[in-house]
Length: 197
Image 1 (spheres, rainbow, N blue to C red):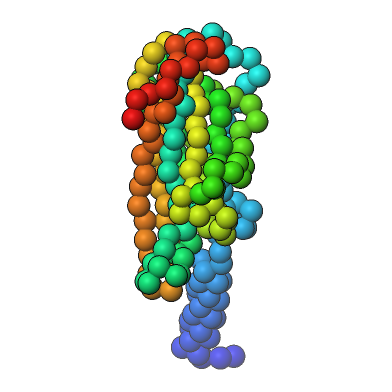
Image 2: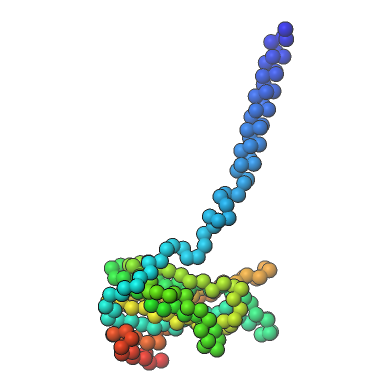
C-alpha cells in the first residue's frame, strides 16, 4: 500500500495532465479557421428583387458614371489596377424605384458588360452594388457606367457612386466618383429630354 502523500501526488499529476490536455484541445480548436471558405461574404451583398412587370413609370433618368479599371502612375507608362464597386442607393424613405439598365463601357465607348437582364426593384433606403474586378484591364482610365432608373413620380431619390480601390506591394489607393444625369424623361422611352451640360 502506498503512503497517502504519494497517492495524493499521483492524483494531482493526473489532474494536471487532464487540465493540460483540455487546454491544448481548446487552443487547437480556437486557432482553427472559422467555418469554411464557402461561407465567405461575396458580391452581391443580398438577393436583389428582379421583376418582369413594371408599374407605370412616369419619371426616369439616365446617369453617366465615370469609373477607372486602372490609372496611370509614376511616369505615365505604368498602370495601377483598380477594383470598382458601383453603388446604387434609393435615398427615399417612402418611394420605390426601378433600376432598368446598368451597362459598363470601356474608354472607347464599347459596351463591355450589361450587369442586369431584367429590372430590379429598389425599395425605400435599399442599396445594390455591382463590381468590376481588379483583374478586368480592358475598361481603362476612361471607362464608365450608364445607369437607367425609373419611378412612378418625379423624385431626386437615386444616388449612384463608384468607389475605386487598389493595392500593390506597400501602396494603396482609393477614391470616389459621382454620377451625372445625362437624360431625364417624364415618360421613359417615349420623350427624352437631354440635360444641358
